[in-house]
Length: 422
Ligand SMILES: *Cc1c(COP(=O)(O)O)cnc(C)c1O
Image (cartoon, rainbow, N blue to C red; front, side):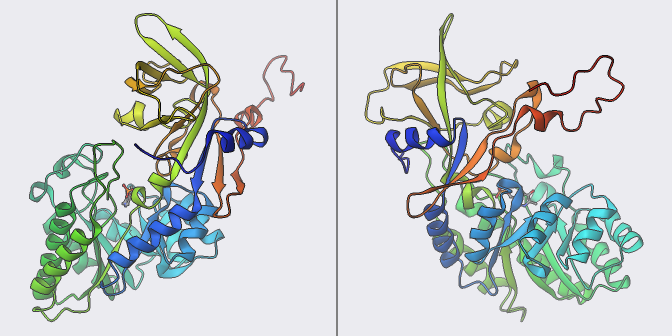
């Protein structure tokens, strides 16, 4: 049975101050995992996980992760701004973007971030529009060398990265533009649970590091193995065995990097999902039950608060608070209120009998949960709460209001517009 770090009574008490729906993040569990994670990879020269900010772009959580020793992987100007407002600068930031506008490159270079290029044409683009930084990283797409998975897709079909030949040309060109320090990156899977996959990825990058040295005389100073470590969303899945990943990568390092005289080679990652995903929960209350061709349970949360089930058909486990030990004798579609039939948190899910007013907890919403939210149908995004190690709760983002949605409308010129009458 999957546990939740709170009781029905605790959540009822929290809803007096913060009405449902909300995401709540478990700080003690995030810290505990961050330490276990980094310990598993501590042998790696200069190991650092750059937390993928897009997974949970809340500065309170980012500050916790920074305290625990992580840097930030940013994919946009807004994410760079968040990192910078936490006072983080320089090579603690990785900027991994694609189809990137010049002003975002300029911001990354201003912050001294490690710029990770997505395409050969961006070498000249960066040099022409911003200037080539001393340190530059490039994203490799191994194409047919590697099988993909459902979220990123087959590498040959994926829009990301350089081909192998382009990579060699890219480093040569960057060097001509004045780059002197080099990194190599790849990210070919997302939500991957197979430990061997990450070992294979490391081996591919290690081989390339050796060839780049041999052919171009370029010394790669770090490899970034990307993010993509999966989490066991389903109860029958198992978490990735970090020790197995770590040991496998160590073998590859000893076999490939050390004999080539390229030790030490820094090894970094940029995981988001596995860092915060399991430690966040979307809490929502049952508003309605509906009995037609199927049994429905309608929540006060909807797809605007958690898009993954609707977007990917993703499974998220559900616990009904106070009914944790009751048998799952009913079968429901658990829905939100959007005018889209894919606004379902679960389809044909076996659950205990549910009553109106019950509190439902949707698991594993700590990554790619709140951050994927949107405002279709005029739905407002929820609050985010932090469950502190002492059991207290802190509001770390308030819920949006309808006024937030209307802020960008130009009312001027709307015939007989009546401004805010509230
Ligand atoms: C999304 C993304 C990540 C993080 O992926 P997770 O599945 O959250 O670990 C890391 N790097 C890049 C380039 C990404 O696009």
